[in-house]
Image 1 (spheres, helix red, strand yellow):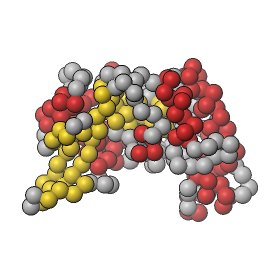
Image 2 (cartoon, rainbow, N blue to C red):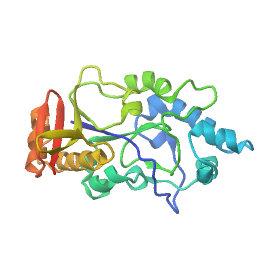
Image 3 (spheres, rainbow, N blue to C red):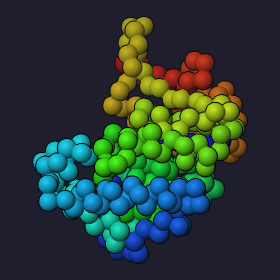
Length: 245
């Protein structure tokens, strides 16, 4: 079983420690050259004197100009395990640092900057979304797709919790892919959960990683989530989590 997570916009910046070592990240052989190119482009854009253009390229507001300074200093910035750097609702519910190393080893975190990282990979805090536009890179999803297709395992069970842009960067061709959706139900009417689906996905991922045996089928995913106290239905290869009002 492999669990694919989205990154989070919010990150906790490490205060001390050595900078990122690209050769120590997951799938270094296949991804290092592309990581170097994206990192160099991000540092260049973020350090440009044309601050307004840089903000627009990265999809940031004027109030987020401090993110440019952080990005410009990335090569020498302190790094820490990705499980500690990524924050946000999903990661708060999942609490990756508390889980055993074996469980964390079943997780990959998508990234517009790194392609993917494992929870124990040491990275600095950065700001780059998959929709950002960097010079001479024609869309980050398209840019990462061939390298990820070559590097990542495409078989077995994949629980895909990524959002659309990151999911488009890599689709496991021969794997059984399970998604997780969230719904509220009142008086028999269901409504898709949008923002809070991140907490639902965090809860399901934690249940899967704490289970005595890894899930092997969509039915296993649904059963493990149900044992964790969630109300679930299996719809094709989607595990639907239902909260009743």
